[in-house]
Length: 619
Image (cartoon, rainbow, N blue to C red; front, side):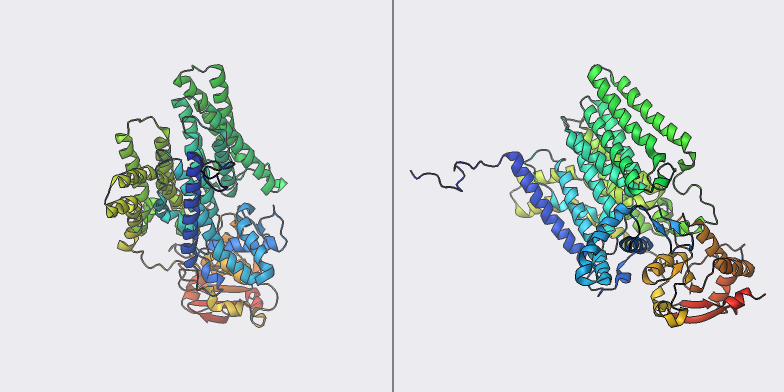
């Protein structure tokens, strides 16, 4: 009998992998493979642009994100997010977080020495969103592994196809903060379902709190999800004992991370200021209430382990209600959301922002997209209900947790369709048990086509349900203003950047508000207004320029030292109210500019005018 040789399974010093370690290895390999495929597919959507970053960026917020990143790389402070070329000379204190700048700024800094700033910015816009998409797919599959019946159940990797809606935020050019928040939300859901195991561990609860705190610091879009997670853990403790430690760890991590990031990302002057549109101490009361509920639950479980469910419910319920009441009492201005205080003359642009529309508006104007937004969450809820009816053990809280997440995503989507990505992500998790059940059936089948069909039937059906409705009901042609939909300032870009046309110094430009971020990114000039609710004075004066009387337009131009006007014919202008005068819009639309506007360049329905200061001053 030969002696054992190193490398043999039975050789000394080498132990066979345990079932748990083997499962983790398989899961990791699957996540890596799907992430690589996802990155390649997303990246392919942006290839062939030949360095044209403006054609790659897909939204006004993407342009503004690049402007903010460039300002930071050029020396603007970490805590200073004032956009000084917007609404000059005061600027606009943007409510955006520097945390979302990190992936793009890091990539630009890494590539700048090799390719130069311009090329580095293009490569960052091209690659960072697909990288986040790859991370989203990996995080989704990691979270899905916690929903499988046992370690022998194959991971349904094809379920990554259900991420069609969230992955739209990771297409090349989508450098805004939504992609990063999607990744954090996927990680948080994976941690949440692990917290609901019969014997939860503190690690997933801490991870849930950290992911929730960082996502809140990036943007308040995830506030409903964090609130739903807190309610789910609280009710899970009410329903069954043993999860108090998870609730306490979640509350501690959430409070520590979110409040620490307030101190790290905001200037000291903003620490004690109530901000309804970004994380601030206005949100401290409900966040601390989660910590207090976890601490009280842990204390009650230790001191009175036999406490009835009614006492447990009263404990966490009273603390949660107290936190919300305190927040509303101290900061009543935030009770209606970030846009509740907007005047009609300032928020006139909000009705045209796609992601700020309600689901009812989306059904009226874009029914195919609306059906695509709700069909996957509906299928997820049906799958969860079917699984619950057929289950022998109906007390598993994970099904109810996934249903609550899907419903919260649908509720946010009904208010503003910006929630459709989160609803789609939660729906993907909700469909995992159904896909796993189909996979188990596939293992029992001897017919290879049946095996393959059962493994891919759920993700393919979901992908079909999401992709087909927009093609059955295509979007109507729109003349709304914007970089992509009709106001292509590239037609006059050469003149804007030519010192012989407007002079060598940076000028103040009045333009359609959706074109403002593109002008900031593509030129050296300053812009009067952009589509941001903190730009109160700029939005007001921009409206007077285009949609006021001649006297109001001349006064606003003179007061704000406007040097140039960019007019877009296809822009659904500021004169949508028939009872209000719109001197400049009407004159420029009929190609009859006043004598104090001198045409400089035109093309593609866009005209650049230079303001004659002497003509403005003349009466």
